[in-house]
Image (cartoon, rainbow, N blue to C red; front, side, top):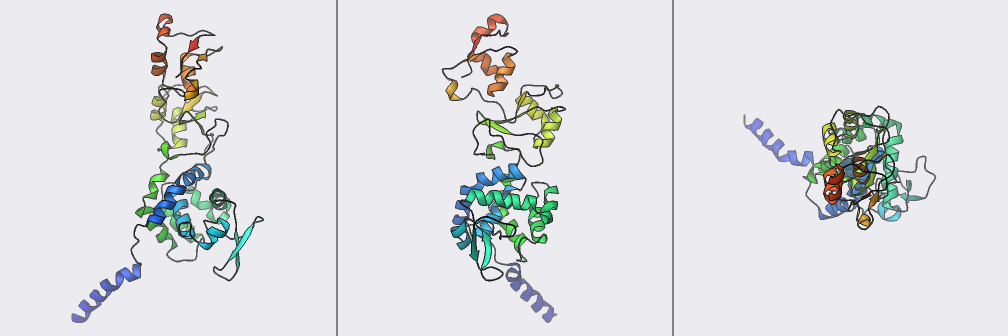
Length: 309
């Protein structure tokens, strides 16, 4: 009995050592997250790699941006030169003087990381996983041979959970979708979607394609179709017209500031609703800004002046 008790106590004593030291919060890691989270979110919507996984790998592979490989070649993910024709740096890893990809900046490294995973045959199965399944992604990366460290998957999971990086994978929170493209003519096409998502008036929108419904759009984007209908001041079962704008967040109270002294002049075929949709402004706010519309029962004619700010 004494031997058994001694064995149990020894096992409990050694357990933390076997499992590895508990990870503690590191301000350098948090600074790295703050610096690159928007980029990771953008790449997630572009290529389908969870932002939490991208950030965790970046933190681990680059030592929070302080590794020699990162400082010399802006390589945040330890990707070697296989199939690479660009600039390279050499670094001791599994062997001496191995060839690693080099980039001009972190943005190129982040994009190449997502392209590397998206285009790699051995990583193809990862993209069948739910974007919120960071544990599955972490274990899948290890199983596919991304790293040789036997604890690689668990280290990624520990980082994600300690710093709550899973919060950046939530497709419903478009406030986190801080795309660096502010112009309407620079759309983003999220992986696995049919539509390009464009940014305007601090909001995001798509244009309707044949066969679209609020239900289908909601399923594709990852937001309730009923919410999308409500944000667009429509009924859930309304028939959508090809080419019309559908907003993916609640519309704003005003148009962008540049329209403060520049009203909209009604064109052929426009309605008060289509004008509100064009600028991403709530219809009731357009009505409030234009009290003169009450005289015409809120009907507009070509050439009418409509304030949008």
